[in-house]
Length: 482
Image 1 (tube, rainbow, N blue to C red):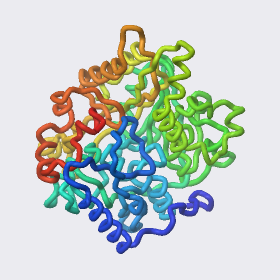
Image 2 (image 1 turned 90 degrees about the horizontal axis):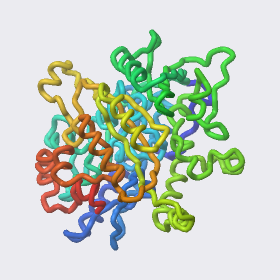
Image 3 (image 1 turned 60 degrees about the horizontal axis):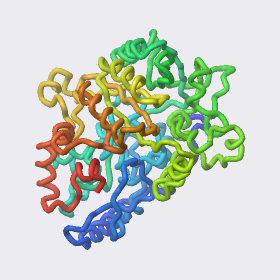
Image 4 (image 1 turned 120 degrees about the vertical axis):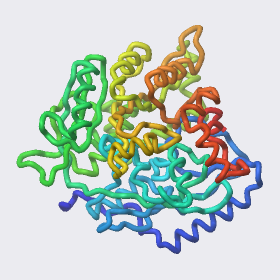
């Protein structure tokens, strides 16, 4: 790595094995002290959930001591990481070794445990799948209060495979051992415009099947739908050296990454800045806070151009409703929050996006191709033995999907109720054979939810590892917001 490409770690020293074990003992003791029947939750300093959480009188379990990397094995390309470690701090520990997690979700404060129990994606997902697929083992505090080591084929393999998308309803990840992959110092970006989602879908299919576009290798791919006739794919590739005469861009201050997609054909970023290109403006959502106004942006401290700062503003509004009350005084319609990420089979992507643009007044929309990783046993064998290896989010191995992300609010029209738009999205996603992530509002009835998110398989694991029901069920958490 070149000087300046990797900054000194901001995560502090690594956690020793003894420090980790002591933190685990304190947590299990605190868990055992909670009376059966009382709600259990984590006391987290950050959260990337948009769905509300029910308040409880008892303080949450203190997991503050589980926020560090334990070790990085550069030769073996693995890391052992505490569950509450953010990807920002995880990268601080791995980049000096020229390594990164196989999938780095878009926002700095997403934790490794959160990305596994709640799913995460990014532009490497078309070749590396989802974060939980590069997990080798997990140390989990289960609902029964037991600490177990879950591996893909060990005694607790059932828990290992059910843990992704369980959102803490089966237990909490105390530490995880994950695979890493090599990085290069620079990333080259090509922004390719398409006149329709159908043309963009054909290009995505080419990239996913060949890992190249127009003969040029592609290491990362995502896209933005600005309008029905303005769709971009950003095709990114590793670079060993900065090309002569090329000045890398900087989107950590006054410049805004998503706007550059419409104005630049190509770009170059240092690896760290590429991985966090969306965090500075929370994709494009910083505009809701005025942070994209040039005058305000010049006065806005650079250290506050981060997704967690915008989260604080969202939590303040959720608690006090100042904006909603102001809009009501002005006679404006109340608004429904439509914040969702949905996985759509690639061949149904045009149908979904065209429906969405016609029915839901939200633009831009993010696209991120995904394909589950090959199990290593050969695609035919894997499909025959385990076509849907993750029961709580049953994507089919070998099938291409595209995540569609949309994050905004829409006016609640007269005669309509809050939730109608989200319900329409849920219905359309199910109609097209897709799934949606559960970090935000969900409106499914219990039977439909069970059919989509694990059903009987979830119940078996729940009974085995949380027999007294000390942890809220996935349906309680995701739909009832308990």
